[in-house]
Amino acid sequence: MGMRPPPSNSDEGPDVIEFGIAEVAAELDDDLSFPATGTEVVESLADPRIKYDVDGHTVPLSEAVSEVERERFDSKQEFLNALHPVFERYRNSRTPGVIERVRAALPL
Image (cartoon, rainbow, N blue to C red):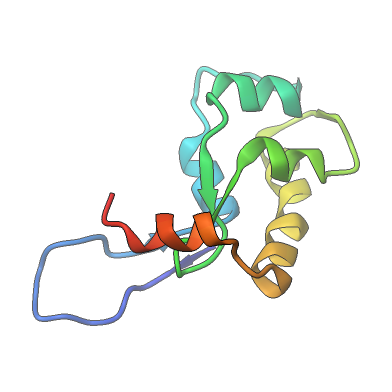
């Protein structure tokens, strides 16, 4: 998923804010080969925190992968397709915790 940020008078900053499976796709390395397990993917990426909404709330990739009902993926697209409903659930129903709110507020 991606969304354009609000317009501003500055030319600085990203053209698109990536979150959910779009951010996972951007993180996936061409060196990673499929078929692979979710654990192998998480380990190869060093378990990054993935934004699941435009507000910058994040979840560890390992947590999202643990909610997928399968363990092995034959392709990158199959992996992303399996993660899509997980990130949709986070985006639509999850209330961020205190730590996530503080982390999202800090300019890191």
